[in-house]
Amino acid sequence: MHIAEGFLPPLHAGAWTVASAPFVVHGFRVLKRRLDAHPEEKVMVAASGAFAFVLSALKIPSVNGSSSHPTGVGLGAVMFGPTPMAALGSIVLTFQALLLAHGGLTTLGANVFSMGVVGPMVSWWIYVGLRRLGVALDIGGGVAAAVGALSTYVVSAVQLALAHPDVNSGFVGSLGKFLGIFAITQLPLAAVEGAVTMLALRWVLTRSSIDLASPRTPPRQPFGRRSVWLVVAAIIGLVTFPLVARRSAQFIGSDSRATSAVRAVDPGYEQWFAGWWSPPSGGVESFLFTLQAAVGAGVVGYVVGSRRRTAVADVPVHAPVHQADAPTVAAIVEVSSEHTSAQSKATL
Amino acid sequence: VSAISVVDTVAHINGWRHHHIADKALLAAGLVLCALLLPPWPASPMVIVTCLAVCVLARISLRDFVTVIKVSIGFIVVGALATSLTIDVHAGVPVGFGDWPAALNLAGRSIAGTSAVAVFALTVPIPELLARLRQLGVPAIVCELSLLMYRMIAVGLHRLRQQRLAQASRLGYVGFRQSVASAAVLMSATFVGSLRQAERLQVGLAARGFDGTLFVLTEQARHCLPMIAMTLVVLLSIIGVSAAVAM
Image (cartoon, rainbow over all chains, first blue to last red; front, side, top):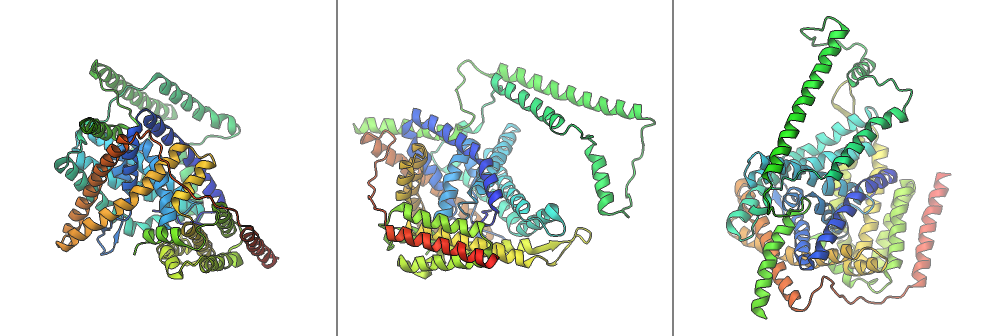
């Protein structure tokens, strides 16, 4: 869903631009590194980006008789991974704003955030998760495309609701409004996009010589030491920041905040459900609370540990070095450049 | 005729084709900022009228201009209606159009902004824009990828239309199921076709010593002082009238 020019107030437009800029810059840096090493891949990457634009001219049928065009978010993410998609997506969205008057230049940041950053990332992770569970490539890609398309529409609705809160019910009411209105068109559309993407992937797999299968199983890489430290630092930062920033806060649990919010909205509210059992004392209550956290931490620790052990054991000595970021372009282009060099040798 | 062919064609043949790109960018950016920052009444109608005037000056037919912006206007109207609906939390259901002046303002602002961007797109061809951006220091990778993409888009669209016509003439779009299946085949066939074509292009370029840089001739344009002066006068008068109305 493209947000039109002028539809966001300047402050919001600026904020979304700032939010999506790092992803776009990182995407271009990754692409640049790759293309500096392999300049012959440039034409291929551009062809893929151009295809993403051409998709917006592809009419797909929608149940209520109308038709619309696929976002291509899912297909792109499955084919190229989320990082290059942010870069290619920003170019595609700029072209759409200029050549189709679809979206706008000041709202480009917001549109890149929903369709170049969040959508591909959601699609990618769903796709990776389904593939690891053993789901077939085409079905995984189709589901990822459908959910990715839905996620872009949810993000757009959030962006619109933040910019135009309802006069009576504020952000929440406005969000419900936008989600509800656009659900009429977007839900069937996302389902159709999933189906089309699934069939398209199946077609490419079975009837073309393009090799999708090999890079499709994403590499299982143990996290690098640096990213572990970055995550640890981020967690420490996130935990300490509120303590420092809001010293006088009481840090009440969100459930009691919710209770008081309900009371404030509707003083006459009657509780419709009560627990079967309540702990005999505060001590027992906090003991159970801690116990559950400890069991949870134990399970998470065990899973992480065992996965790490198998991951280390699985990596063969001559493991092909994949870039988690750009596996597919790389792979498609590898296939084609072998082709190319063989052909050019033949020509010479 | 779809919007993209209109924009691309008009951008190359309009009356302002040979003006310096910075002059046109100044006008468009000024109009977008006016639409976005000034109170919508009277700035939005003034911006829209300016855009129409530019179309006349640049010998762009108003039909083309409308073709380009009409789809967006549809979306804008639906979105503005959505913002004006109010929802009562207690009742749970939407109740009437509460804030319609705000919605009207929003629609005006948005249509004005879209028109200003459309005027820019209709007077500036993309390759020229990219070449200028490169001179201004935008990284080479961005400009070159965009330029390559732009050149492949036309070919891809042509391929898409041809294949769709072939499918349609074989009853490929009769019924919902058949339409979904045909759309999927069309999507994948276009993708495979584009990649194959890119491969052939790559072979051709490699044979000519392609190192990743495409050299493209761009026209050297001069600044047009009367045009800049007129732009400033128009922008200042929009701001002035807005200020007068606000007082």
